[in-house]
Image (cartoon, rainbow, N blue to C red; front, top):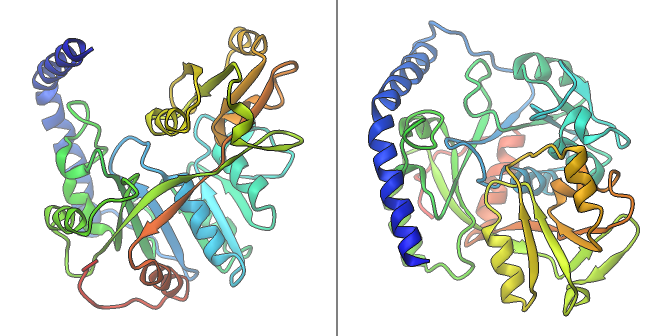
Length: 352
């Protein structure tokens, strides 16, 4: 296994060198685009209602959905909220409101997840964020913008940038040599930077070291978070304790960017399972559904559950809920989010 990992590392390094000229070109194009927006040659529109954007620099897997759900839980009792998402890989076009009985194929798995978990919140999808926000102005006091950090046509009132502990953007390169959608300099637009998927016991010294490497601007603040897995699993009709899976032959099915943390959590819990892993936001084909439906017991992620639960006739299917927790000074994090919802912005240095 060690030899295989070393071989993959060598191959990836060679590919990165081959692709580097294309990365230089991509970097140039995105940098010019950002410069044109920064200098107002391309126009960004602002809105009267607070718009809080959650995004990243990388291609995905930084924990945007759990962060959106955290913000919803924090703000929903005090504000009339709306969430606007692109609805990645949905079959519909244009602006669509998400309803409880919508399908993941029609409007996307994550928007459906938001709506079913928080039915009182308005959820909509539109690839054109500017038009989508305009249509939501009368429906909400605060709009949460999902995965829109690169949508420069919109000037959000507050931006949260996510980067994972194991793959900080400061260590990455732009596409195709790396996974960044734009250069690291794009991080300067963020108001808050959240380092996600940290070890639960990350030391304060490690946090300070990462903060130093991020080279925050004076207006920026950094926080650290980790994923907390529930001790229960949720099915279509029932909820069971995770112990239910002990000594059970079950299949873990994932369609997420990085299933390793979930795999490790289940293994550390003492569970053994068959793993079937698909790409992020995978649309399951008929043959794949037929294959999975022959399994007796399936555990999956919440967003995969949205795509599987109504298509599996025989297999028992459950998902394990997750949420994020902020490490250290969570009250300060909450205060800044609520201030953003009130259009109140603090001017202090970004120390943790």
